[in-house]
Length: 526
Image (cartoon, rainbow, N blue to C red; front, top):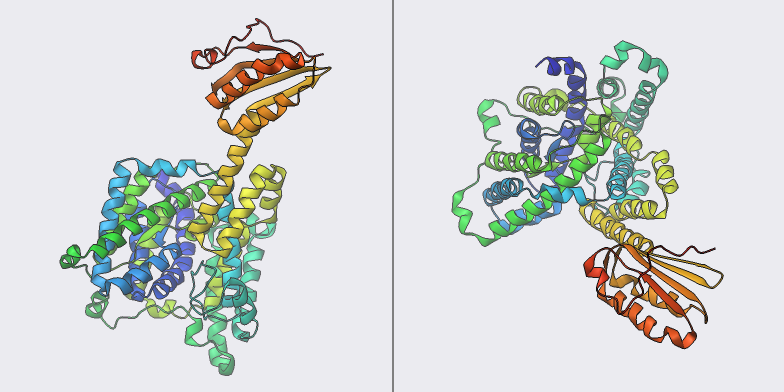
């Protein structure tokens, strides 16, 4: 309890930032999914409170995810009844619960670091590219869209060009001032003052942006922002109407096979996105804490059960919100829980106040978050690490930008796997030559993939040479490789080549060579 209160100031401040970022994203994802707008809010509240309480992550923030938009939109159209879709969400939650208990969370540990960092950088670039139109007042695409192809028939890059043709002066002013405030807050002077440390810059950005917007309404109405350029929360006239925003699943759709297909699809994709999001948020953690992935799947399962039961969208761990949480300086998961609580309070009691917030201010916050995720220094660091790290990193970024998050990650993993195999392939066999003496050192696991290079190098050995094949460092040698070496030994006398083998200590390797000559010490090549 004492630790909670020690971090209360930082977590409270961070929760406000996450709240401001999450509300338009929740609404935008619901809009893009073809679901009721309030369904996104329900998912955001459940992701904050329910998942936040059960999860072991101190940084991750859950809610409706852009990566599920296509699946959700397709399912709602296919199932015809929203109540049937909600039942699929509940079943998906049960499946995730089972996956967590079965310890399936270990899958996330096999994702290469270069791919995770590439995902974070790609998210940063997407935020910059996707939010720029909102920054200048072009809001044809919904907030939270992460895919290359957009619902407005544009794509990420054409949307930028179109935005320049529909610039809204008031939005540009608000966006520029907002970015200026965020940049100033990062300067040494502001960081050195305790007062500025206590007040989150995004809160000031929203307040100043709202004031400027209201000034335009009062003094320059011809330039004032239209309603479509502001946050648009559903407003209930009374509690009875507010209660009507909630929808409940119907068990009568259990017999519909499409419900089960949708549930399994949601469970698999949501679980993968969650594990990716958790890995990403752990990479951002200054304290390098490790999230228990199996517990996270359980938390997400319970969260989706609750969200589906109340009429909400399916939820996952969301990198954008988690990044905003980290950048805002959160310390514990209390910030996640508070943001969900505040979201519920806001939509229930003060939606009319939040509906005055300009989208341009929120776009500035997200753009600045994107800049922190995709700094130039990150690209330099990976370039210095070598091509085997840099290529998967860059390919992951490009694939995510040109498709969507999940497809891009899969492409990145495939490229990372290629470089891993390539690295093992090269390091498994060492060939050294000096003065007609050749050393073939077999290391670690020598697979059939190494057969071509071994065959090629053996055949290149000239006449009257001496060849030492050192297998003492090999844990495993494929039988194809053994056969190739034995074949070379059988005809080596034709070129007057002397061959000696230092056997591996492993019997499985030791016994495979045909009549090798065992020597006690390796021969030194001078």
